[in-house]
Length: 78
Length: 446
Image (cartoon, rainbow over all chains, first blue to last red; front, side, top):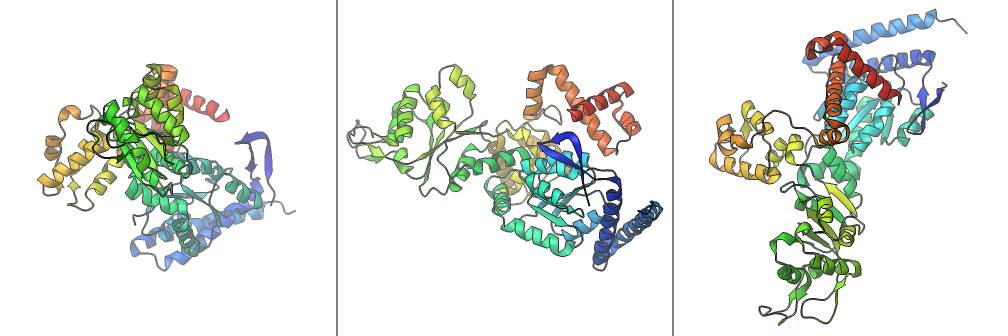
């Protein structure tokens, strides 16, 4: 994974880290799957009043993952 | 031990839920975007802050920009990210975060972080200090005291400023306790004595030094050997007395009244006053060389009216060993609207009165009876010192513009950037909204 440093933009005397679009896609995918895994671990001990909400959020995360995968498939293979 | 106040900054609702669930038993607050996080960090009080690095779909590490703000508030900052590259890790640590963890193993990671926080001197001490020794939830006061505690172990003199009843003596004791100086904390109120009596009080005297000196008596300077000498109300000390004390502070030696042999004492000076130091210097009531000797570090305590978040924690502390009090909502509002001219001392007296004379259930009429209407503030808000200073610097117009911009930006953030909602809720013109947005963009670019 590589980072692009935005030329000329310096904050607190540090160069700002900018993530390339492609890397963002992979990051979002990683983040969503990690969230899903952590939520699955939580679900078993989840109090009943919270369970429905967590399941709904997990469904949404799963849909996001499908969208991200579709986007990845559509990208030109290189 | 009180609950830890924790802020979770995370844009993903599912991960927020996971983290919150793993922090069960603590007091949790959350922020889903950078603007909300900034507002909460600026105004709230937190012990620990979990920061996600990417806040939003097209975000460029705005979480990194929140670290300095959290650190400046003395918050134990923990970065959580699935983006654990060398660049992000080193930058997060360089900005002051305490821990960086990779998302995905929340159960064990979060428990370990809390355990490490409690073992960390800063965290444990802060928790104890601000919930028992000097009760405050005010971020600015906490930050100032945390900073001051870093300097307690040297000999640097400390000057505490603030209105009467704000806790200057309590703070001085706290600073002494953290100094690790083996000697005693010795306090003297300079306004309580005439010049002659203050000299005898501070320097001590030999038997027969003056008519009533029937026996030799040790002065406060000697008593404070290897400890701390706390001089309250130094503005009341005469210039002559300041000269004598200045010499004693510089040389660590002095002559008790009636003695021709010097005494030595290794004391550290903490002084306090409710008066304006600059005015005292201008009016010549305070010698400049004496001022230089006592003001190594200056801490200014705000009046209670400017840190109303402390009112109920203080009431809780004052009633810890007595009858607990339950305030009805209207009574709470009245207390928050009160100006508290006597500060913490007035609050303590009020609590003593109502715990004695009531059954613990406090109604509005009870509060009104003990806090007369004339002392209550005219409105629900009071301007802060920063706002007042801004008005002095930029004029009233500039200050009002700044307040308006702050309200508009906050409302926009709460409405997730929906301008139409802000226009309706704040009843403002499009022209004003866009001028504020343009100004904010210019400031961001700068």
